[in-house]
Image (tube, rainbow, N blue to C red):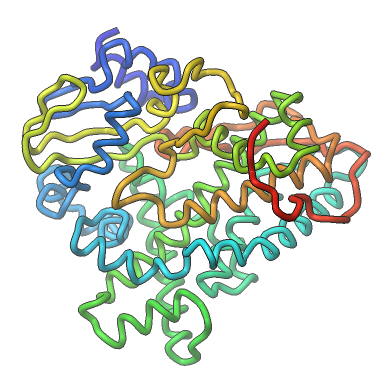
Length: 424
């Protein structure tokens, strides 16, 4: 299969639902593969890692959007993403990122552990209440979505009563992150972006009337004090992206990871007995089935990677999911092995655009998986679940599970004091 055919397969519904076989077909052609004029796919770990850190590569700017996406300014979805830190280059990217970074310092994230544990315990109780007499429950709806959305909404100061609104809005909007999108999907994305921006317009007005100790207030004050630090469009766009990115990736990590653990019962049993191993497990889960499968970069000057000359203006799709299974970096990459030597998955990217909320996502997963396995020792898949037909954000739409009849009550909360997080 030549690279163009492999790319077509990757973008098909079948390829999006399970991209890993196609990654290997692409890898047969090299770690950097030309798939069209000035268009390349990156499958190798060292190349992907280096390109993401290389200042000669950036995200698509306005001039290139005008060239490749004429009319993008009329799309609320494309415009919202493009005005956020997700799709801007330095110095604008650095300026916006600094304003939000204070909410995601290691100390502030560590201080949220008790809140995450309490929320996760409450959601397990809800799963038990809804399970009835052995009836399945949807893990995505009952746990994987509400846990991270509660955490990011608490950071942003979004009222708890409004959390159920965001799942559909975000699902619609994130279609615009796919490598290609149909007119109908773009219309849905525009609808989601419009509803999210309307919501945050009202929240911004509320925080001007009554400031609070939250990230929304901090960004509003940065805008109002000095519009050069954050414009009105940037304020709304970054609030939208912080909310969506704050739970979408973690929701997918929780769903993908639970399936892997339940399909590897010996590994799950070890984690149940040794919650201190959770950090190593989460890194291997991120590597094995990444919740984010790709990102893109444009070269600003001629470069060479993977033995391939890349002219200025080359567009690269960096396949994070393929890089995480590069056999040159990880022996037997298709085997889930939480006992691997320390891994460094690219699931949250690398370099200047490394995911701001990566530490928070890791914390939520490190809390959730041992707790679920300990409190619900009979937890089991009740069917294959429904994969979303997405490539960029890989996850489940639904995931039916049964909780068993041997659930344990809330007692201690798992990780022993002083646990190091080593893997077995």
